[in-house]
Length: 423
Image (cartoon, rainbow, N blue to C red; front, side, top):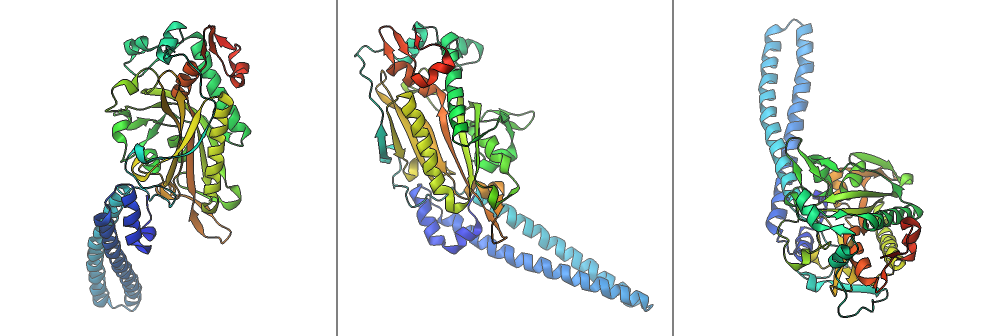
C-alpha cells in the first residue's frame, strides 16, 4: 500500500497518477490526510496523558513516604481519571488507525512515469517483437485437436473428475509439461535464482501482504474451515518469505524462483478464449521473485525481462512485449510488461508472462525492509514475473510445431523429454 508520507508529500500528484489507472482517488486521499492529522493529535494527547500519569505516580510515592495519605488519595483519584481519559483517546486513536489502513488498502499503487495512459488493452504499447512466425497451412489443427489426436491432454476427463478448466495430461503430454517446468527452473537457477518449494495454500495475512486481498478474493479458491486460500501464483508465498523481515543491505538482492500449481476461479470468463489451454482453473507456472534496493529495482526489472525473452527465444516461439497502459495494469503494480506468444492455429496472441515492479507498495504491506548503510530502516522494492506460465506455452508449442510427421519438440527440451517428436 502507499505510505502516508508518499501521499502527504504531494497529494495532488498522487491523485493525478492514480487517475492514469482510472482510479478517482481525491476523496480517499483527502480523507487519509485528514485522519492522519487527527491521529497525530490523538497520539500527542495520548502521550501527554501517559506522561501526566507517570508524573503523578512519582508524586504519590513521595506523598506516601511523607505520610500524607489524604493527598496521596487525591493524586490516585487524578490518576484514575487520567486513565479513563487515556482509554477514550486510545480507542479513538485505534479507530483512526484502522480507518486509515482500510483506506490505504483500497487505494491502488501509483503507476510509474513510464506507464502509458489508456484504459483498455487496446492502449497497451508493443515495445519489442521477436521470434520466427510459423508457416502453417490453413487447415492447421488447434492445440485441443492436436491434444486429442496424439493423446496428450484430455479435457473431458478433467470435467468428469473436477470440472471445466482442470485438464488431465497423458504420456508425452505429461512429459512435455514436466520438461517445460524443469527447463524453466534450470534456466532460473543458472541466472542466479534460488529455488524454493512453497506451500500451495496461504493464510489471510499472506494474501494481504502481496495485495491479493482485499482486491482479488473473488478470484481465489477459499478454504472456509481453515480460513486459507489456494495460491493464484507462487508470487504470494515466495514474496511472503520476506514479510516482517529486516534484511541487511549487503544481503540484497534476494532472487528466488519457484514452481507451483496455480489456482484461479476465473469468474466471469467465457467464450472461445477459454477453449483448451487458453484459460484454466488449475495450471503450472514457474515464478521469479526479486527483493531489491529501490535504486536497483529498475535495472533488475530489465534483467527479468531479458530472462523471459531468452526463454521464448530458446523455445523458438514468436513473441512480443507489451508495456501495459494504466487501465490494464494490476491494482498493486507500478509498471507491468506482458509477454505474448503467437498461436499459429488460433491466429492470436496469448499472454504467457507478466513481469512487474511493485516498488514499495507490497513491501509496505509486508513490512519488508532493509537496513541501509546509513543505519536507517528503508522499504525494499519487490518484483516478480512468470518465467513461465505453462498452458499457453504448451498451446503455442503444439500448434506452431505441427508437421505431417508429428509435433517437433524444441531442441532445448529434448534432454528432458527423451524424444524429439510427438507422433
